[in-house]
Image (tube, rainbow, N blue to C red):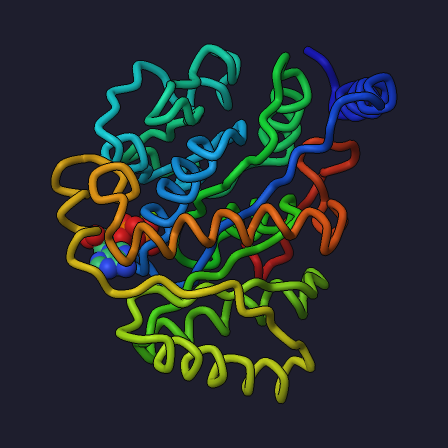
Length: 293
Ligand SMILES: Nc1ncnc2c1ncn2[C@@H]1O[C@H](COP(=O)(O)OP(=O)(O)OP(=O)(O)O)[C@@H](O)[C@H]1O
Ligand SMILES: [Mg+2]
């Protein structure tokens, strides 16, 4: 079996041997609180991006309780569990979703996958580096909470998009996530997306409330990434196992999610792929601290 050190030096050699590959923009979508719309947002921005001609891949990083495949009406044979166990490669488990989005499905009901070991993290990173045709954009749909995996996937991304709703519990959980990532892991840039707001005023108000506390207690200023309205078309599309941008392209949520995709591609020039530990680069070994685990 290859040792950890051998794998790490192999990764470094491979990364430096491929300077011509375009960088992959990696965005992790997190929230703290569950049920705020992360999976729907990821699925829809991915489909909107693919329709605009971007090569998008989505990773269902809710490794133990994934449901991205169900949301999009897909029935994958293999999952990331097979990749992590070394039985399959990423290319073997990828399934094609709407508009050609590439989806890396997770399994559902495997408790051991809530905290990847260092070897499993390295193995996954090697798999990403070995992709013959890497995507232009990788969206990571994180699990709810602040588990070791959520922190790990947030740290290997260039950007963390935190989804918040107007519910006070969503605000406190988002704050908890931002606090752990910024104080324990020195993550300094957070993009905030307000979901399920009734109008722009409410969305800006929620953003202001969160900014006020992060500014005061964490000395951190947040970026407003946009907002998605509370829209019945979205759950209707979920019931049809379709992305709302496909089922109801003119619905208010579809328009907002398509705009978000454009905004997010613009982040490439704001901060040309800096930040994060970089999933598609060398040296991503990471161990959660006691508090982060
Ligand atoms: N803008 C919206 N308008 C109306 N309903 C919405 C909106 N966004 C999400 N929902 C609904 O909220 C519910 C939760 O969405 P979703 O599963 O995407 O959340 P999640 O954050 O991924 O949840 P989990 O933390 O369990 O992974 C779904 O029933 C979805 O239809
Ligand atoms: Mg989800």
